[in-house]
Length: 425
View 1 (tube, one colour):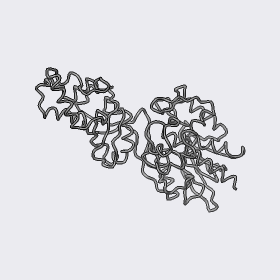
View 2: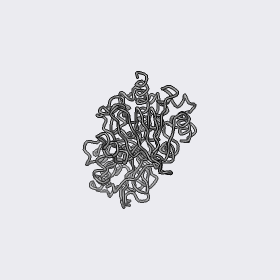
View 3: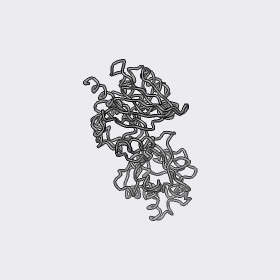
View 4: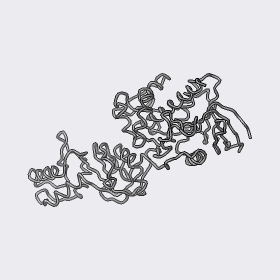
């Protein structure tokens, strides 16, 4: 077995691990040894595939106060106030821009590199970490703290099968959603960890004739409600009908907040869509439809949506036709019960989800280290100099660059605290 010495060992070469390692190296003396141990052959894989290969690196400047910003995180939001005050959206923009990365902000607030390529972000991170020692294909198998407070990190190199051990003053755990690493940390230090469950997914809906042939239709805004999850608020935004069910920003946001109850229900829950986005109440839509019956009695129900926005039909004709069950009945022959049923279809379309699907190869998890066990600097209260960053924390956000913002933030907060500790020492 090879024995090595480092000042800081970072476990995990994802975005949080690399960002933290480079920041520690930048903030500390040049001879400081910072080592990153990554189990796979490639660093920053999640950065590379995020945003469809474009990398939604953070969110728009000036759009949210910190108080509003933390509301974009279904789990961990209260604990993020201090962290995002110290290093948040503005600081994330500045870090990349200071390194020559031009950023582009889209109308919905998402921020991408101007090149529209995640390689720009990957290259910036790797260049910043050029003086960090990187060990890939190196899986951590044991982690312990010695009586003198030092850490021993044991790992196996997957190619050579060689076992290596590092002695380090500090350890940063940034292993994302690696269940074996979660198990190792839990057993080694009695750290409580919420089991990982998927977040940010689309809703699969099987064999519902109301959606057949409608793939590609988007309604903005629509309102998404999970009727059996009483504590969850409705989410309003774009909803996209897909070949497999429902997607779009409103669905993804609701999936993030509903990650725990949907997992408990094996992803089989009713989902209710208000296709008007909350514009009207039920009795108001009923009256609008009755007005249509008087105004155009000879027109077929399915011919055109009579609900208007800025003088235009609110809903695409194909969707409207499906909501009236493709009826050839004329408005003059539509009974009050029929009008009531149409109004309910428009405002309360209820579908049963049959599963979930990952969104654009992205995978975000709810779960991780419970934050009440950590200081404001993300150091384990019971294990000094053991830190957690990124997806290893029980923190996750909705789409829009919020997960990466929390990642950069947690990594920088830890780096600054480790650097200050070494200065004091």
